[in-house]
Image 1 (cartoon, one colour):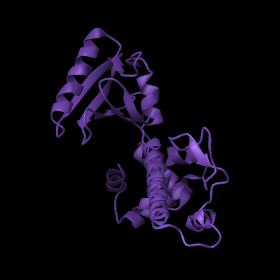
Image 2 (cartoon, helix red, strand yellow):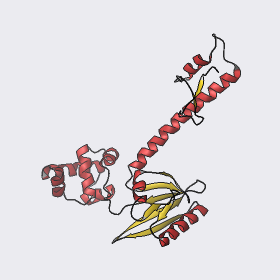
Image 3 (cartoon, rainbow, N blue to C red):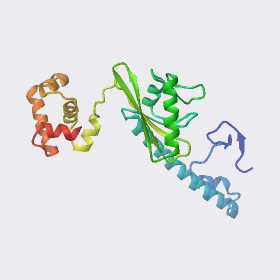
Image 4 (cartoon, helix red, strand yellow):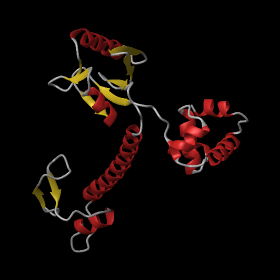
Length: 239
């Protein structure tokens, strides 16, 4: 009664929340205290449990957001799937699942574009589920190219990890990651990313709209920061 709870479509699963909900333990303690009296032991225990639960929920939410952000930056699709549904996925997986060869069934499960492919997908998922330390790779023909789908066992009952890549998407390196990992300047990171793609200093200069000598200077700085004497060695390490 002290919480003045009212039915509501709140963020709590119960559908009930306290009006003007306090933001911290002190606020709750003030709300629950009557005429300056100490809280009942049972209420005190519940308040402590509730506060710990809020902290754990906040930490878990932060970790989920961080992991979600990391998965969104991957150039491949990543999803956790069961035989009946897709439990979680990044945007690239959503795009590829709704693509040419992979579809969703009416129940939301992974579905192949042909009966033969569907049988392969079902069999691969079943084998990985039976051995969580195993993996199964499928090759999906796509004109002259082929998409590879990998199913990997995870410690989750009746679920597997699915990784799928789009052969039409250029897997260019992330300049920000190169900058942070190797200590490059922003411009050096862009030059390094173009080196990985096989461009020459002259081609990089044209792409970045800078002088060729400026580009060569950046390449020298990149080699120095990586401790490499040859451009080919730096490119190999970047790749």
